[in-house]
Length: 522
Image (cartoon, rainbow, N blue to C red):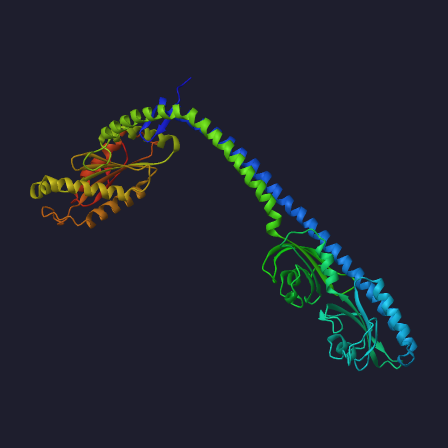
């Protein structure tokens, strides 16, 4: 079985002991990396799954909270709605002039005692004066004609119950939510208002029984966003509007209930909210848990998991370091030997003056390149390039200047050859050779033209040349190994003949050889 081979630009050579050690080192390192990556991916997936789960649990919690508070508010208001509807029918049926005030007072007082949410029941005349209430004492000259709910009913004929914004009671000083309805005379004219009030404190105490985090929030608001009740309770917040909040702008117009993440407009706290619009009344409840309270337990568990994972990875790294240290020491030694070998090899194949390859380098690659061109069916170009009147240049300017001129030409060749597979060598003295794989006559001509132009642009003065500048002549030979006989000898001979043809035609130009057999320049 043939030994393992490695392909380089210089040919083939057997895989060294260093190569085997490096391969083993990389295999072990890759295995450890895969194992550690597996640990990280599995733990990362578990952390992400837990993260999603805590939010799913939180979504369920806020949804249930919103439903519970919505049902509680709806039941409380429905009771007041029902009692005020019954009282309105009785008052309108008896007529204001025939109302038995002591008996109605006793009835109102009895109903207020039955329903714990009630702050009071009131009947106002058309001028806003207090006709009868559940209270034992009526403030002197009491009149509610200036209240919003009274003004609304006086100017609107609808008979439905109306839930107003929070006001402060004139009889007790408590914050109350007014629930009112219009009273009419038999002819349909405005007769007064029947009012039931719910204590804000009753909602606050109910909301306080829920076990939510300190930065959580429960809100009862009107459909226009006006806050009626909020936990945590801050009196200055009551009456503020939530109309600009994300829930009222982006969600409630399209869904009567749901879950949303939003930043509170009241205190700027990011929360996960469950919201629900009451089905029977224009009210909305929001139940929110702060994002921090949701992720804090998950973060604590994640930190512990990450610490454990780090300890495991550190252990694996320590074990791997012990295993790989021996391999690394061996690789260092073999690499030093290999580097010394490569340095010697590079010195043997490199021209010390120009840094280009030398003739030995060309001899090593030319025949393999011809075989590759034959297999792959592409053209191969060889260029012989010679500085014009170089002996005269050395005689006039000295050998140091001549060496500098050769270096400048080497830089021009490196600049012109842009493909990694192209090769420029100093063939000897002032003569250079270019090997251009997969290049036809047109492509080779373009490259040579660029080289000659770049050389002239260097502006190196040469008094011994007719053009006054350092210039070069070139001969190009292009072979097609797949369709004709191409050898290193006939390819170089053709390029050399084309070079001398360029010199005979006056130098500072190039000629193109046609055919490997005849080697006739054109």
